[in-house]
Image (cartoon, rainbow, N blue to C red; front, side, top):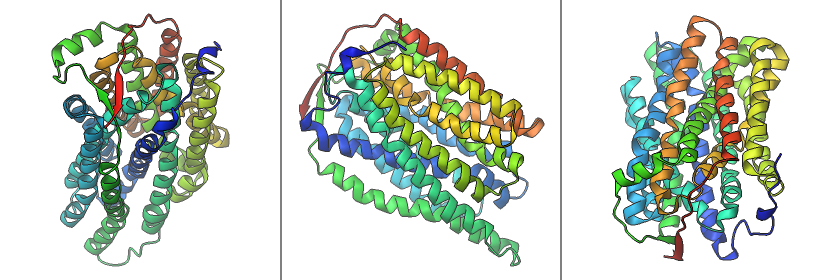
Length: 429
C-alpha cells in the first residue's frame, strides 16, 4: 500500500477543538443506534403484519434511506445559510420527532404509519449527517481530515452495538417470548408496544442532548458568501471526477452495508438454523464489535498508508469474503459474513473524506451529495430482498459483492485523481 508520511506529523485534532469534536462525534453514536435498531425490523414486521412479504417489509429501508436522499440538500442549505451547528440541531430535532411518531403509529396497528415515522426520523439523520460529517473535516488540518472523520466515525459502531443490543434484548427476545395464545389483536398490540419502546426512550434522551449542544460554544465556518448558489455549485461539483466517483462509491457502499447487516438475520438462520435473537447475539453483535475495532485500526493505519490504499485493500477483501458467503456457506460463510463488517469499517468516512478533498466552500453542498448517496440503502436493499424471494438468501449476496468491486475501483482511482485547491476559515461561535 502507498505510504502517507505527510499526515504523520500533523495533529488529527487541535487541542482547542476537543469538546466540540466530542459533541459532534457523539452524534455519530446516535445515528448508529437508529440504523442498527432498524435493520432487524425488516424480518420483525413480516411476523407482525399478516401477508407482508420480504420485499414489502424492506420498504422500511426504502423509506429510511430514501429520506436521506430527500433531506440532504435541505440540510446543506441550512448549513450554508445558518451554519453547521444549527444544521445539527435541526437534524436532532427531526430525529426526536420521528422517534415519538412511533407512538401514534403503533395505535393505528397499520404498517404505513411506521413508514412515515421512519421517514421523518431518517430525514433528521440525513440533515444531521450532512452537517456533522463535513463539520468534523474542518476542525483541523485538511491533510488529516480523513483520519479525523474516521476517528469521529468510530463512535458510530459503538452506537451500532448499542442499537443491536436494544433490538436483541428489548425487541427480538421479547417478541420471541410473547404469549401468542391470546386474541390476535391483543398480540399485535403487544408486539407493536415492544417494537416502539426503545425508540421512544431514545427520543426522550435526545431532548437532553439537543439542549446540551444548543448551549455549547462551537466552531463556525466563515463563509465569504452565505447565499446557496445551488445551480452554480452543482455545475462545479459535477466537473470534478473525483467527487462524482466518490458519490457513486458511497451509493454502493451504503447499499453493501445495509444489505449485509439487514439480511444477516436471514442468512445465518438459513445456514445454521438459529433464531433471530440468537443470530443477533452470536453473529451480528460480534460483527459490529469487529466493525468498531477496525474503525480504530484503520484510522491508525492511515498514519502509515494512504487512505485510498487502505480503502482499496479492504474493498478487495470484501469481494473475497462475499465469494465465501455465496458459494461456500455453512459456518465458513457465516464467519465470512461477520468478516465483511471489518472490511466496511472505514469505507463511509474514507470515501467521504477522499471525495471532499479540495472542495472549499463547496464542501457543504458537496457533503449533501455524499449523504444523498445513502439512497443506495433504499435502492439496493429491496433488490437483494427480491432475489431472496425468487431464489435464495445465499445467492442474494452477489449484490454486496458487486458493491465492493465498485468501491475498490474508486479506491484505485482516488490515488491518482487531480484535485481542486480551495480552503475554508473556521472561528469559534
